Length: 221
Image (cartoon, rainbow, N blue to C red):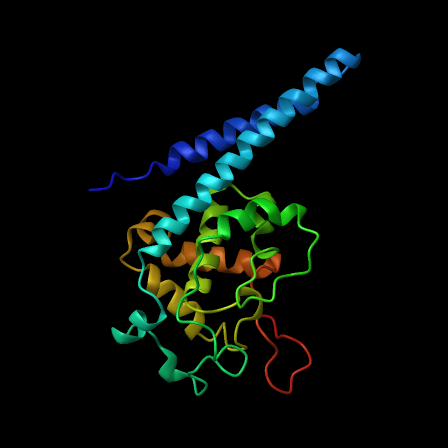
């Protein structure tokens, strides 16, 4: 029997670290000794913050790994693909796997900000998509966004190249359905909260749709 993870404690610890970083950044360094101490403290807090990020990622991956995959979702009739004539995900994603192994996502989160390599060509590249860990959202909001990105990958999508009908409505609905009645969904989402997190991801450019066939730009809502 597993114990419930204390997300609020993790949010609190992150905020304490960020407050300490902000405090030390405001302290003037009047001499070399002060500067050295300031740099040491900031380095220490940055390392603590990286550890917190890794803990977020590990807990999210653990929760997502326990959710049904694409094939399981279809089997129980939760998917609404039948409304869409391109119900095989379309030519851009028809060959994607039913679920994507996210074992290495936490490492990608920690290296994404310092990664000078070309963007990965794997179906679900998170090198840039998860840079949102540095976006100035409250921790809970950021975790909601990160969960949605993981869910999209588990469903076999590249969040940065969703099918052009992503807003109308089946990709988004599939992601929401996968969270419905799941513990992590109950912890972080209501329908309104999910919609708000989805819109933040779109605004920040971390999820986007391929252009509709014959269209030169992606229509915005």
